Length: 330
Image (cartoon, rainbow, N blue to C red; front, side, top):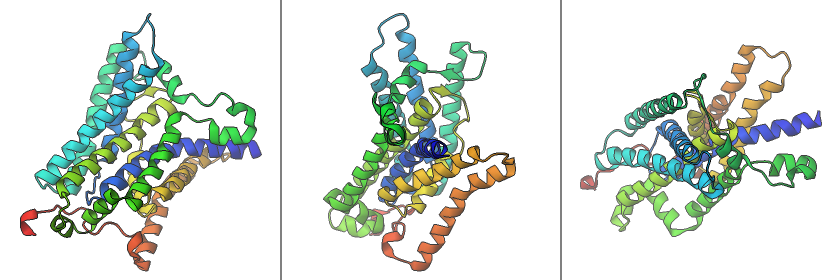
């Protein structure tokens, strides 16, 4: 029984890390007033970009010397580059051209999934594989490598030390983002833009610059969630449309965490547990399993209702969230 609980916690953490990356990135974006519903597409593009980088490097080093450092850095760089490009597209449309943020985000999700499936399908054809997937075992082993002494520490090592480095990067990034938002002048400027860009602009803060930078940084963070899913959770196997609804869960987690990266850490593991628990329930029906998968959204709705009723400013979304800023109207 105890070993099953340890395994559930371990698997919940693995399920939750992509959500933590996605929600942290979206929080950084939304704090500037940009509502980016394109996070699922950005995570998908981040994943396929990292996969493409890893695939090309593994293919180039066949029969040669595979560098551990390059084997990690190339997928990371490709992932961040692809994700930032998606963030730039969003900013150009919503900040520069002042397009509707909701429509742009949804279009970006559709576009991102299409791009991922196109390039994923192209890579699969290059491998001449009998199954519609790509296996990047060598790169995956680098991302999944855990501390060598974790197995010697029993349940503690299995729960806390048996994960790949991106797991700890996700937690550190969330903590750093929380500190930047709450304890620095940059964070104060960013939050002021999200609340009232007109006042921030009048105070001499470059609204456009902050929106671009925060959205691109948020996109890069979210993209790492897609890379983690493929390289760590899925053991380096890419299959088109295998990402599920994790991008939308990451957006739901932003509301659950009331726009706080530190609460997103707890929420991501809770959402991950709700995904994992049905697997360990004997004789569970398909309909019951679907109910468990629905629970994160139901919990988010409950949190949204409670925070709306309590109406505390610190638990609410930025006041200008989703609204384009027209400086000429100031």
